[in-house]
Structure formats: structure tokens, C-alpha cells
Image 1 (cartoon, one colour):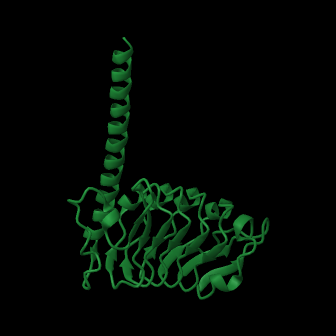
Image 2 (spheres, rainbow, N blue to C red; image 1 turned 30 degrees about the vertical axis):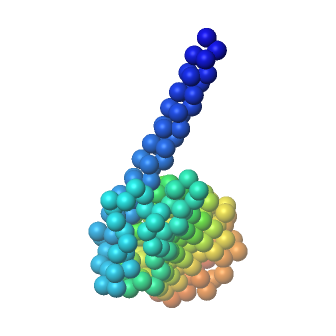
Image 3 (cartoon, rainbow, N blue to C red; image 1 turned 90 degrees about the horizontal axis):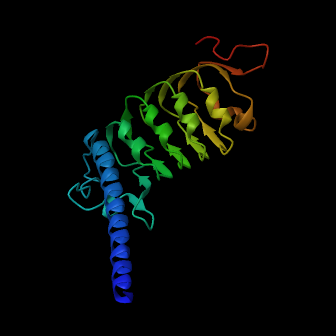
Length: 218
């Protein structure tokens, strides 16, 4: 009976290990699919994404990708890589991502609202691209966000007030766009310098609570 119990315990342990490995593989494979969707949405004349091979077990061996000890993607570093194309909603599936660095490329199109699903994201750097459309209010769901740099693009519309509710947010730069309305002055925006909003011709200045509508001139 004792031997049988030990065998059963060993078998259970093996099952647990197998299920853990399967879950890790499935998660890594899902993240690889999301990243490969990004690759399909981008033109890459300098072949910086050449190592992105979807047939590999997980994307942790790909260049410009960093993973944690559980093989979950935590960093995407593709700044200044001469890429052009569009962001894809699939990026919102990288639930452990902390740094999304795509600055100084030629990214066009809009910012997917699905990026708001990145609850662990610390830094979103999309500055110096050609991104258009509005800043999605869904970005206000990123409660770990510290750095939001969207400057030097072609963004329009108002600055979402949802961002002011992200208490972790320390750096916001949306200068050199075509934003309109007024600048939030509460919450995390209370100490953001005004020069981080400059060169938006339709932006009217700091919001005067109770006196000015935030969407004036939008």
C-alpha cells in the first residue's frame, strides 16, 4: 500500500509538471502569434525582425524581445529600427509586457484601443512616428503605466481624462501633434510641465475646472 501511495504521488507530481509546462508553452505560443501579427503589419527593410520565426517554441529567443523566468514577454525594443506600417490589436494580448518601445520609426495608422489591456505596462514609447487618430481612452486602464510618450506624431482629438486617473503616471509628452480642447490639470497631470503639450495648435491650455469645458474646440 505504501509503495502504491508513493507511485500515485509521483504520478500526480508528473501530471502537475506536465500541465505547468503545457500552460507555459501555450502562453508563449500565444504571445509569439501576437508578435508575429505585428511583424506582418510592418515593413522591415533592414531585416531587424529576421529572427522572428513563429515555428520556434516561444519568442524568447527572438532579437529585440525580453522574457521573464517564466518565458513570458516583458519587453519589446524596436526603437529607431526603420520600420514602417501599423500597430496591431494583437499587442494587447501580451499581458506581461512592461516596455513597449517603438519610437523613431514610421509607424502609421492609429493606436489600438486593445493596448489598454496591458495592465503591467510601465512604458509606452511611440514618439517620433506618423501615428494619427485619437488617443484611446482605454489607455486609462493601464494602471502600472509610468511613461507615456506620444510626441511628434499626427494625433488629433482630446486628451482622455481617463489618463489623469492613472496614479502611477509620472511622464506624459504629447507635444507636436494636433490635439484639441484643454489640458487636464488633475490627478497624474497635476505636475506635468506645460511644454510637454506644446505645438498642438488647437490645444487651448490648462483646463479651468468649473469654468471651461475640456472638449472646447474639438
